[in-house]
Amino acid sequence: MVNKERVLLHCCCAPDTTVPLHRLQSEGKEVVCAFYGSNIHPEDEYQWRLEEMEKVAAAFRADLKILPYEPREWLRFCGLLAGAGEGGSRCGLCFSLQLMAAARCAVEEHCDGLCTTLTISPHKNPLLIHRIGRAVAVKNGLLWIERTWRKNGGFLESVRESRRLGIRRQNYCGCVFSRKGDGSP
Image (cartoon, rainbow, N blue to C red; front, side, top):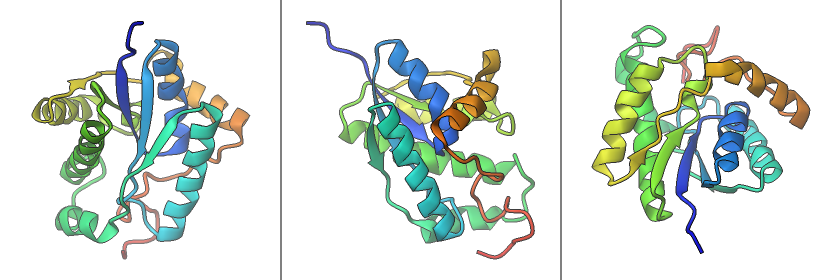
């Protein structure tokens, strides 16, 4: 019997998880999903996104790990860069925090590799995400599975798949600084 490659998929939200999870499973990988939400503001938004994530994991019969919700800790780090523009240094720090938490989970779950859903978004910088992901993976003895999920129509496919599953899409990344009309944590 051949062992499947065990991959931890860092999940930023349910809609963005649909395509990466399906594609990794289609490749024969055993996928453990890890939902990170410490960046999500306000808490009721976090709860709603967690419920949507649970629906996606159930639909794809995937194991789901919920990483600790620590918004104060996230704000302690990323709040230092509150004035940084969207897509800038604050986002890089946020990606680092998310992927470090995911890597710790991957090690605990005895995974071989680490991957993220972040690269499905047309609003995120995949080169930055992959640079951070490679460094975090190497530091934790993991293989970085470098995929830019938005390629080949991945983002539009995620929109269709979300609709099919009845998953609502959000209009901001979750961070208090990206939320339109709200600048207070």
